[in-house]
Image (cartoon, rainbow, N blue to C red; front, top):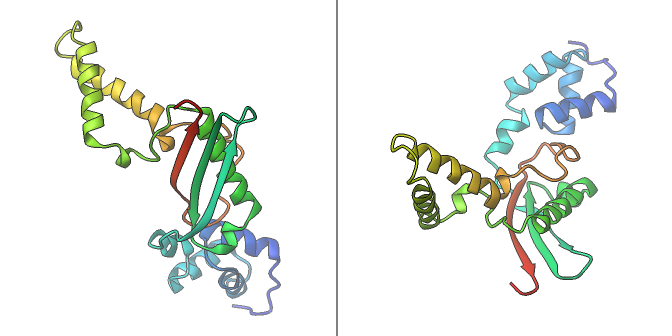
Length: 191
């Protein structure tokens, strides 16, 4: 293909956002494909440079710790959000995202875990038993479904990743990296 093809920074960024590949790789792919985005994506895949595959196996070892303290000074949250590179960890959008996660956790005091995997099996079993007892007056064939439905609802309340974010439309994947909400701590006066 033509190596004379002029590639704009906007096109390179768009390809990077779609594939997660590096800037220089995206520029070369667009140049090699004569500016054809689909062919550039194919070129990156053939060369093994499509970032999504590479990033999936990379551990998020960079990141930021952000906080939120409610105006009354009685509720506060610290949250660690990790990513793959220091460049992204210092990005204003990434930091704003981490702060919004802290705000979200402060606003929902029922949040106890980042993911369902963190819930101890004993806690799930205890909740299931309560829900089964609450359904004891229902027909026997529907009790397990009722208990399971209530358990799912409970997990929506206590698991951060199961909750709809208070600013859901504000943040979308822009980094091309693994972003992991690693952990948080919520503090409230009197608790």
